[in-house]
Image (cartoon, rainbow, N blue to C red; front, side, top):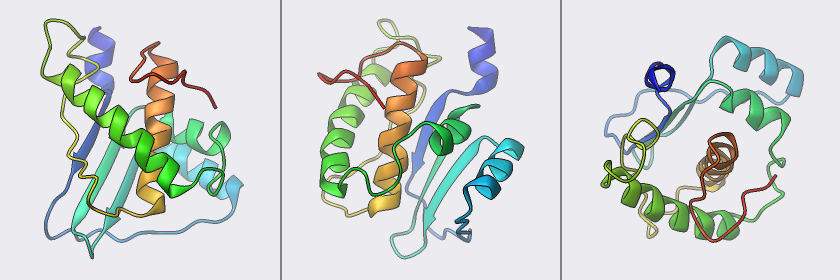
Length: 147
């Protein structure tokens, strides 16, 4: 468990104001894989909506480009529906540290179903939930996590 505390297995969804980061689009899969080997932190930001999502989990970024279904495979509505279910369960586990491993469920996720976060955010969040469930043998909803 000490290893997990160093890994900081968490999804930080901080809908922060004054987001100053820029978004770099890389289309070549080989380049994306090389870039992700340097850092396993996935960051998604949108200056218009003033939010930022940071996913820190070694292995996720590589898994996202190598194992996850490609963008466009799932509809945004499909992923939003699943993300709502996963976020509710995730947040329930965060507030019950005596019942669920607090090293796995450290922070709540602020995901408002009334906000359109766009395809990219929903894609990366949905795939993180799939990755997390498969890697840590967890079940966040009634669906069997699969690729």
